Image (cartoon, rainbow, N blue to C red; front, side):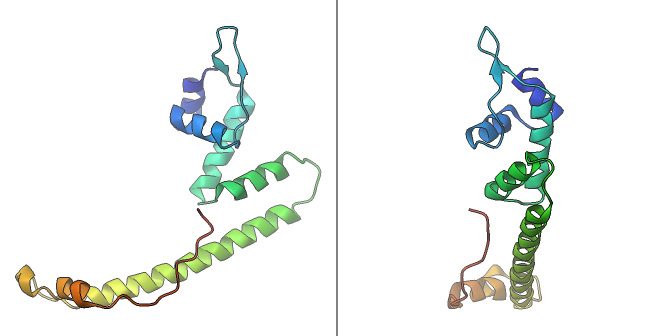
Amino acid sequence: MKIGELARAAQCTVDTVRYYEREGLLPAPSRTDSNYRQYGPAHVERLRFIRNCRALDMAHEEIRALLQYSDQAGSDCSGVNALVDEHIAHVDVRIRELEQLRGDLIALRARCAHDSDVGSCGILQELSHRETDGRPPKHTHLG
């Protein structure tokens, strides 16, 4: 199948296919005599695997590691489990950060309880006058 057919089969764009090829996540396809990329069912399966990992917010390095495990049929799942456990820990950190952000936004929203003139809007005043806090940088495993 050609690249457009692969993209349709995996429900993504041609640019996405090319991007994952450049990143080394999707192996380069064979070429026809007229130099068209020629993909097969294994490419569809791998692209779906990659897209499912991305839907779980996994970084490319995590996906690369999972693909390596996947390519090692017969070995145990301990590495896969450890990777997913680590990803869960990343998600837990992000949830805590998002809960803090939500609390900050709720407190900010409480600064303007009425639909008044923007000149006296408590939200805008707070954003203009609040000192930037010294919070540690957000933690993320993504680049």
